[in-house]
Image (cartoon, rainbow over all chains, first blue to last red):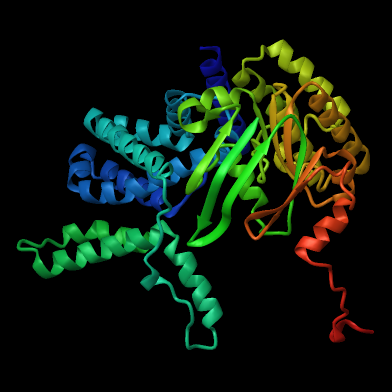
Length: 213
Length: 243
């Protein structure tokens, strides 16, 4: 019990340190996109209805955003240090989950959903966060390493700027924004090609997302 | 006691450790080898940070899978990446670790003050870790490894980047722990220190144990044995570097 209390006190201290130095506020495109959609729903005067009409995009943007929050948790708690501590599995999971939930941006988003879009949206956010964090936690403990398929690697490019292009491609592969933008673009294209009752209103959200990406 | 049997480890199909058999009893065992020989990987396996692809690792007769908590309670590790809480100060890093190992707040404070004094960190104790010099960071991480007085210490390059005075203090501290019955396994590239303090030297070469000897009873010095295994340095001035 004293050990668990020590862990919680440590997390509290880390959170306050981060808050005081603004290092926890790592804005990224996903966060901007989510805030943009939230504010658009708020401006429409019917935020709850707006939430459900943009449900798909909320998931597509929130999931990678929550992945970045979850990865931030690992940065906050150096894995090499925590792995050497005499903690049970339950304590490790608690440490990771509490650290995740203490992310100031996570708290802001939760209350944003709760007050602007209602209890259901708030609970949806927490549920999605639990699923994402659980997945990231589990993937981090896989006995093997997940790798990019070899076919996607550019080992050599014919251009003179091959080295730069190769470096940019490698960076792009590791950027969640790229994959999310690709998913949205593919989804939008499929909808455009095969959707039966297309409405220009449905593209507004896509347009915002593409612009932000 | 550290016991490693036929341990292998590969990264991206590249074998790093090729069947390591190593039993370390109490004393100071130095693990030597060129860059990429597998020293840090072996320490990562022994500290439970990674599992071997095959073979087994046990500490004090216990395996990490079933007795991880018991092993880690008596294990002190100086990891390659140091594992500091970057937003905390030196003293806060130490104060955070003590209670995790069951020390009370006052015990932690007393031991931290002692270690900071010995390692010449008292003045910089309120410096945030990310603003510390490399030497200060390493000494902080080392103090974190020593704080709970572990029975087994695994130290990855504890002397590299450390000033001579602190290096002497660390040697004294490790010697003291060793005489209290601790088992210490460390890696180093500073052969003179190894020659002076190690009770056993193990040289890794291309993922295998190539030599295992006691430097105080060996005919040759650590440096001679080391270069006979990894090859003599070939100092050759490059043409384009000539004046």
